[in-house]
Length: 423
Image (cartoon, rainbow, N blue to C red):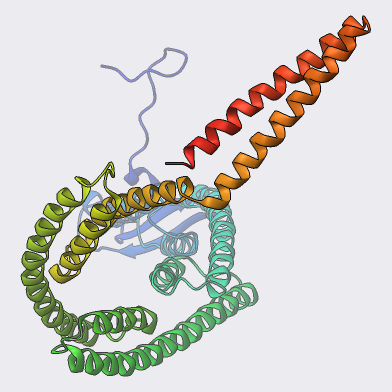
C-alpha cells in the first residue's frame, strides 16, 4: 500500500544514503552535512554509483553500530558511565567517518541518548541510595542483635546465629567508609566478646567435668568396695548416700560419664541382687512365721471375753512365750498382728482391773460409809418433816420430804456400789 502523510497525502520516502553524497569526474566522493561538503575518499576508474555504494556501506555499518547502542541503552545493559563512553566513541567515529549517508541524523540520535542515560544515572543513584539505606538499617539491626547476643549465655544457639549474621553481613553492599567501619567495629567487637566468653564458659565446664570425673571415679571405687557386703541395712544406707553424692557431683565428660555410671550401677546391682536373694529366702520363712502367729492369735482371741481371770492370764503368758519363739514376720504383717495381740492383752488387763475394783476393801468401806451417812441424813429429814406437820407448816414438811426423796435416790446408788465391791 502507498505510504501516507499525517494529512492523508502520500508520505515522501526517506532519502537513501546515496542522496547525501556526490562523485567528481576524477572519482572523488563527497558527503554533504549541515556543516557543508567534505571529501571522504576517491575511487577512480569505477562508475559513480559503485563509488558511492562503497562509502554508503560504511555508513550502514555506522548506522548499525548506533542502533545497537540505542538498544543496549534502552535495555539498561550498559552502566551510565559505560553508555556515555560508548556514545563518545561512536560520536567520534561518526564525526570523522569516511562514509556517505545521514551523518547528522546519526549524531542527532546519539545526542538523544544522552538525556536517557542521565535519567538512568539518576534512577541508579536513587536505587543505590535506597539500597544503601536498607543496608545501613540491616547492619544496624545486625549490630544490635550481635551486642545482645554478646550479653547472653546462649552458647549453643548463639554461635550459629553469629555465623548466619556474618553471612548476611557479607551479602550486603558497603556503606560509606566511616559508617561501615564503625558498624563493623561494633559487630566484630560483639562477636569477639561472645566468642571469648563462650570459650571461657566451655573451659569452666571442662574443668567442672574433670572435677566431676575425679569425684565419680572415687564414688565408683567406694561402690565396688561395698558390692559384696552382707550388712544389708547399713550398706543400703551407704549406697543411698553414694547416689546422692553422685547426683551432686555433676556431669563428667560424656563417654567417661557413661562408663563410670555403668560401673557404679553395676556395683549396686551386685549388692542388691544378693540382698534380694536373701530377702526372698527370708520372706518365705517370715510368711511361715506369720501363719504360725495367726494361729496363736486365734487361740489368744478365744480367751476373750475373760471368764476365768487366772486361767486367761496363764494361757496368755504361754501364748507370749510361743509368740516370741516363732521369730520375725513380713513387714506388712507386723502392725496387724501386733494390734490384734494387744487387743487381747487389753481385754485381760481390763478384766483384772474390774476384779480389783470389786474386791478393793477400802473402796467398799468408803461406799458403806457413804450409805450410812445418807441414811442418817434421810432420818433427820423425816424427823424434820414430822415436826413441821405437827406445827401445821405444810410447806416446810413438803420441802423436807422432797429432800429426803433425793437422798434416798443417792442412797440406792451408794448401796449398789457397795454391793458391787462385795463380789
